Image (cartoon, rainbow, N blue to C red; front, side):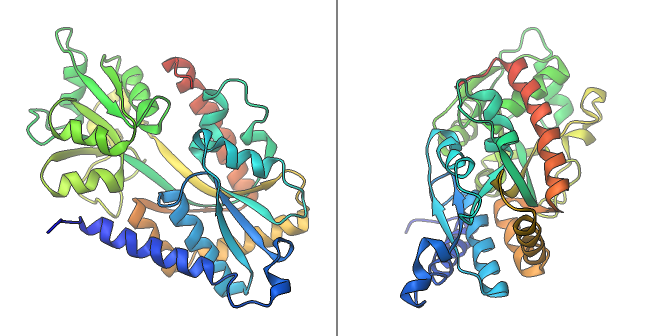
Length: 334
């Protein structure tokens, strides 16, 4: 019998429920209500099944239930999230089209991708933010490295030949690794993979020395005893992992302010009316503040981070400056 990790069982049930509930926003309605004109669309610029998709479907379901809206989720993957993002950038103000955005598509991609005809950080209007997720620093279970401090010492050893894995060039894990190396003045070779699963498999197998990974995937390996969790990259410890310290708690002075997190929120075409912006922002924050919604965030290793349009705009500006510098330092490009 094939073993399915517990977190995947929960996640599949959550995604299946979200998909079904998202569908009920359309099915069963009169024909005239099923037109695009009557829908509020949340575009997810990635394929179904990931954290962005899960958040969008739960948000759509909650908005539909609470405000009796006709809210649907549409997936438009491609070009690292740029295709779906551009669709919203080009959407008409009265199209009721919104983007499920996160730091990668909004603040990292404009610096990472050369020749884009738009800038998500400036060509979209933030509506509201609702969650933040961190990464998990892991090493093989058999590694002699027991802490962030020991890892830093190894990275600064001139005789070391350490490497680190990521899900691909320009990914959050790659750029976080570069930021970590720059802060500590350490040295390691980046090994990009085509996805998180093969990257973690090679870390667990000892072929690669460490990785900054998305939490749900890494936790499956940690719980099975194949990886050791050293730290989370959030500014404070996570409720999901209360015994895992933050990188900033490592005792390494150069890492005292270290933080690498992704912010999730909803954005609109720049031309959205102030009234529509205010209304949708208030609706998002109302449903995102409920215990039922927030309990779903932990499935993806995320925590609540609530803020209105102005709060989210400030966050986008702050993250864009930060990640532009990291991309520049790393030399990463796509």
